[in-house]
Amino acid sequence: MNKKLLRTTRVILASIFFVLITLLLLDFTGTLQRYIGFMAKIQFLPALMALNFAVIIVLILLTLIFGRIYCSVICPLGVFQDVISHIHSLKKKNRFTFKKEIKWLRYGVWVLFIVAMIIGINSFVALLAPYSSWGRIVQNLFQPLYIWINNFFAFLAERADSYAFYSKEVWIRSLSTFVISAVSFLVIGFLAWKSGRTYCNAVCPVGTTLSFFSRFAFFRIHIDENKCIKCDKCTKNCKANCINGKEHHVDYSRCVVCGNCQSVCPKNAITYSHINNKVKKNRDNVSEKANNVNESKRAFLFSSAIIGTTLAIAQEKKKTDGGLAVIEDKKTYKRSTEIVPAGAKSLKNLQNKCTGCQLCVSKCPNDVLRPSSDLLHLMQPVMSFEKGACRPECTACSSVCPAGAITPVTAEEKTSIQTGVAKWVKQNCVVVSNDHNCGNCARHCPSGAIIMVPYIKPDVRNNNGETEIKNSTEALNKQEVRQLMIPTVNESRCIGCGMCEYVCPSRPFSAIYVEGMAVHKNI
Image (cartoon, rainbow, N blue to C red; front, side, top):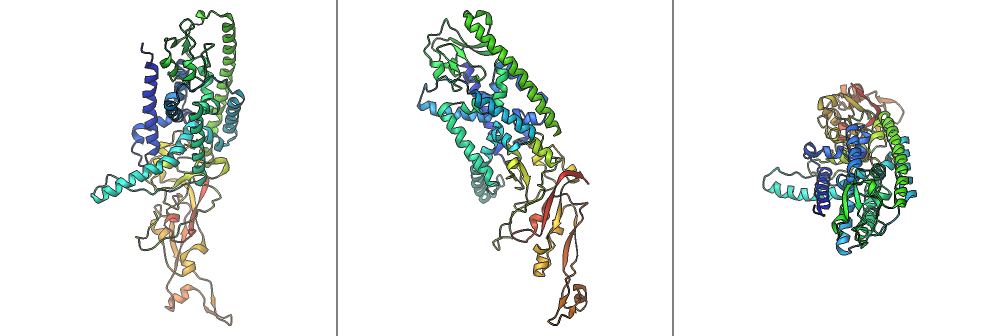
């Protein structure tokens, strides 16, 4: 068998997964979702949060059979580390060494991660989850460049009377998430450049979880002591730093089955096969292996218990005026309760299950979703209406969520789900402040929840304190003023789409805004 077959196969499969998942995160039109949306749902943590037992079982079985191929093929952050490491290796070959497992860091981070999931500190979970990390890196750092390129083609297409492309605004949805994304990119990239899979094997909680199973995978890397000449090339090319070539030892908890060691071995002493323990000749090695197996069994049982507990807990748990004038930007209201999309069911459900992967944010066609800046729920999506409104016919976010934080809903179902209620702020309304009729909110309300009623102005008194005009109705009868109309909200019909808040001309704060509901209602 060709000694480079394992590495070549792994590189081809990893390239396919990496490119397609990255394109899925970059695509803002939703076109790719129908074809490759499943790739987000087969990531380990989203499948865990969605209670997708079929995917979890398949990933664990793959690890028990082939080792940690999830980390080297399916996980986009793992492949990203390989890309950075490979670029450095082109310049500096044979640069790796065997390093002992950093147990206190590896298992310390893993325990903190599990505790954070249990008690609901999801910002910490999203910070460390590999798929979520890659999602926010792509959405915040790479998608703007992708959109600028798209906008350039849209510019050319417009002049050719073509509608193949359309322009989209590039803007920072959350400064805190952008900074976190940049820092994550630099830190993970630096670690990969310097020492390969350090982040994957010392920090990543998914890698640590799968390591409990990979210790006794059916197929593993094996060094034939009779063929080995101890050239140490396997050690110097192991990006996981898990091979001690001098002692013919492989740390299977960190091995990601990349195939580098096998491809560089000059004597074909390294094979990827089932290991028969009977061929071991050294009694000390056999004893050491037995101890490692016992330790692995304990770790396996402990990991299974933690995953079961986590599953149980998870279950509970365009601004324009036609180009005639510059419009002042709106400011975001501080809402008592954040608004989350229809399909989330409740604020708590989204916060408990969301991994902060930014897929829904990148797919929102109306720029309504943005990462939260709340410390406990950083990077999880919330709704705001400065850039657009949540149109009743749009179900983009519910169709892409891989973690079950936003469950699928149809357009018909969405029109009857109340995610929030509109509130009128009298002092901000142009009718009150400028004596000028508007009615934008009522005209654009898709559910007919806003109606206009006559505005009864306060008494107007002269300098002597005498009432000159009792109210606007009396003034209207005297033909001294025209009748003013103000909005009133029928809360039983409002679905919290934010159309009223978006179209309101008042600046910097709208005269009508949406207050979120902790638990959604069907109306």
